Length: 261
Image (cartoon, rainbow, N blue to C red; front, side):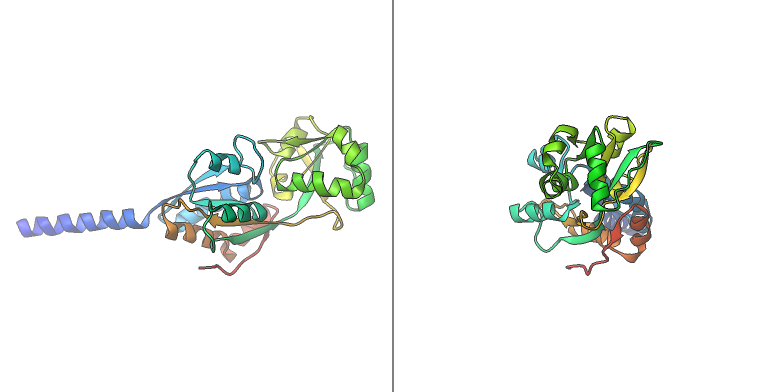
């Protein structure tokens, strides 16, 4: 009888230890472009894995209190970062993210919105986009990768920086479309995936090819990772063909990379 009790005890302990070994909490922080896709994909991942994913949100760059650089700077710990590839490369160089763990997940393009029911300007050509920008009394753009491109590259290229300094403003810590929906800006520009899910706005299209800048959004594993294998497993799922339909529905283009491990 004692032998039987001992065997049962050993079996129960082994099951418990096995579950704690293979189940992990994965702390992920994502920037806005991938946020809506991630919200849908995480429950699908958790159906096939014992791991649990805890999602946090922040912009790829900038000094806002909830931006990813700020949160890492004040010592917050995450296992996986998902953000604009140039920003991720910066974290790899600084040592925050482990070399050899970058996985490009999606390509993201930029588009525009107006308040629901408002006239929709034609931004399908450079001339149309320029006219729409100059005619708008107020323009909102992101404080993250897309906004940096608009304010430092595209506006100067179009020769409208001086006018945009008067009518355009950078939006911190919320979606540009939310500002437009409230009527606080006539036009708003951001990654398409960050515009489509916001109620109260009408999508007016992608920027024309001559103005467009495709940004890769990538995942990387931090130096402070608690469970390397679990983090790799999550990233592999996000980069898989199974995740592609959800990614496309969110307004993004799957990359389907070869994993580096």
